[in-house]
Image (tube, rainbow, N blue to C red):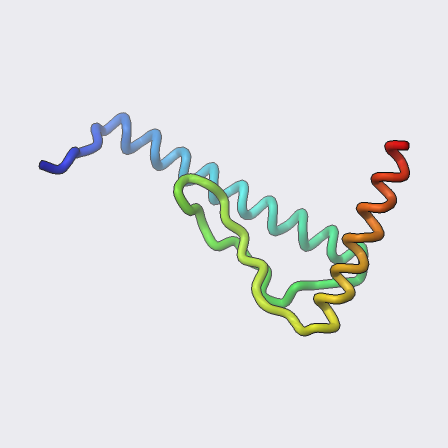
Amino acid sequence: MTYELTHAERIRYKRHQDAAYQAGEEAVTDLQDALALAGLALPALCNDGPVGCRGFVRLGGCGVALANRLAEVIAAGAHALRDQQL
């Protein structure tokens, strides 16, 4: 026997899905902006829609040079944050 969601449950689920989608959109924008500050861009970065009522951002593929540069920028930022905390 299959459980049928009530009308109220369907509405709550839809709201969670909508919120997750919006969170994904905001995360993509924030990441694009942060990457742009470092002069970087991930060509396939996109919101992949909600997965299980959670936002999901697809980072996509990139070349080795971009991946290495991204690693450098992340490491430099992490070191700067660590140094600020000391």
